[in-house]
Image (cartoon, rainbow, N blue to C red; front, side, top):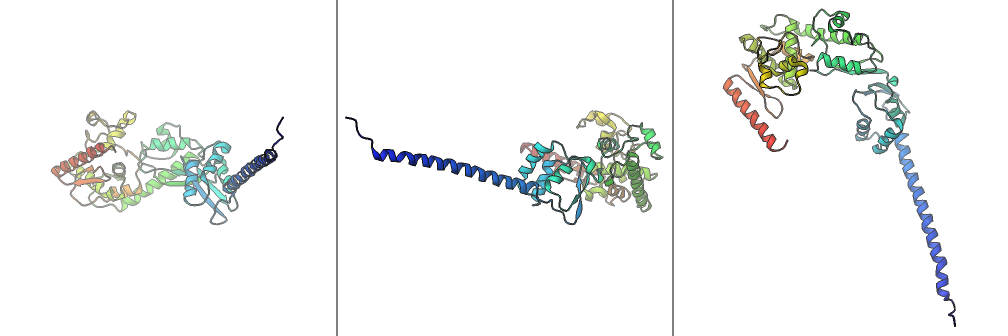
Length: 358
């Protein structure tokens, strides 16, 4: 005889279905809530007002700046939230790189609007041109050629014709243009830019020459400019500029060769690939100060105003040697014996760093 159905088992089935329905509803609600939170975070990140101090301000974007670096900088300054979302938006929605220039950000613009504005150089109000101390004229020209905000009129001319167009009386352009940060109107011509840089450099040179120290071994201010370019390339520390100047000035006075590597590198031109060999030091060129007496024929880089001032005001020590310390800066010496000890110290530092895997 079949058993009658168990009433307790038949009552449990509706309860199980009810729990399943509750779980699905809870899951759907959780997903919706999560999406709402994500949307809120996304919205607050992108459509949040970009922080502006006044009604408007200028935002400077340099050549080589990236969206990732820009967004990270804003996050570090607590100007935006959730930088990863901004980076994702840029990657999938903007599809372009930041363009160098000076942009105007007005009050009420969102972060999204600013990000999109920076992808189009047409939105720039002014063009920022950075000329770094110690770069060469060739590097300056190449940077101007790559700048989409510069109108090109003379950059492709042969060197002598370019100088003629700029009304420059010198036969070589190296060193004649002042390194600094400049702001020009968007679309400014290369001729106007180079003319301004030239006049700025000549002004610095004339002022320094007018107040130069006595008994300098320069025939004219152009030789002082040559010296300034060598000083610029030998040290990146402002506190050492006059010391380096002093070493080279004293060497010129006693008829000792300058023996400075940056002049050798400049004379090698495209043959220089990052290292100087002993053979390079022995190979004569017009710029190899290991084989020639006195100064090279032209500057070897674009010297800063500080380097020009240092060339006119060398220190009054007796040092005629210097060598890198290996830890930043140089050791200056008055005697060869002292210099040789400094060289050994430098080599010891290099060996120590090599052993430590630096």
